[in-house]
Image (tube, rainbow over all chains, first blue to last red; front, side):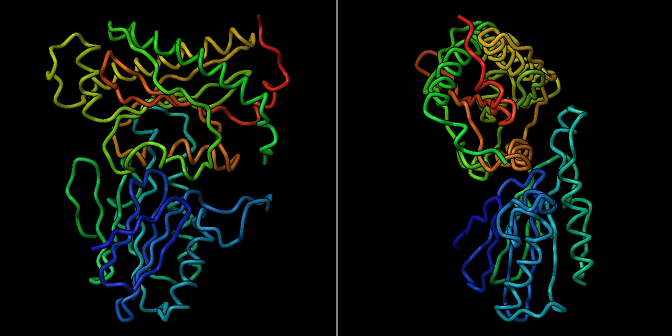
Length: 165
Length: 204
């Protein structure tokens, strides 16, 4: 198995059977997984903030730093490689509020805003999504792995074993 | 968006001088807390792309303790103390006067002790800067997180990324005798308040 680290503000698409796409330690960041089992294609986005600021002075509009544009970009990349949107399995992981759990009450909750931005964007794009409470929100970081060969997704939380979602 | 030109050579040199003195004082706070003489190792001032911050400290999914403070006033920003999980338990023993190996998990008492350590280091650092520039700076109470390194650093990155694509990072490691404490001390000032600092003269 070859692990490919999908870092902050990055995304990756793969149909390489030996490859495992991984986003380490998602705190308030959001991991968005899209898998088309029929074409053996998997994609993973590691986004930082909900959407591009309206000032418009940021980078490219399809920047993977943002949940909204990152999801659009990931979908376009998968379709270009042969995926069909109506076959996609979508998972979102992360979006925790790390500071609230640590006792700092005055925190702008980027994690929750990231999750909301993902739900809104996926709904607009007519992508089916099933979000388990255990996979988003809360106060703990999560590592997400996408096993390309098996179209399988796992999550690991500190102090716990990797589990399939 | 703040221009990188803010960080010209003279300004970075001034920041290095401030960081050096501030971190030495932070180490004094650390020493006072644990009752052992702590020295500072490899202090540095770096201008780093915000998105690379999680790569500056070891492996992103290693377990660690993060003690986080914000500060406001004439100068604003963030302070983060990052301690590897095993080392945090050793430090908790030292702070609480326990025999080595007593702490086996980080409960509320141990977290509170580590929070106080971060609070002291941060306050000593900020006092130095406040005196040098005659500023009013007010730190928040510390927040303590036990989690993966990358998840802890998400807080710093998410806060910075809304403002700037680069961060000025004051970084140092603390040393206890021949042993590295492996504790990273970061100060990340908000770039807009640094602009005000750039126009101020140091108090002699």
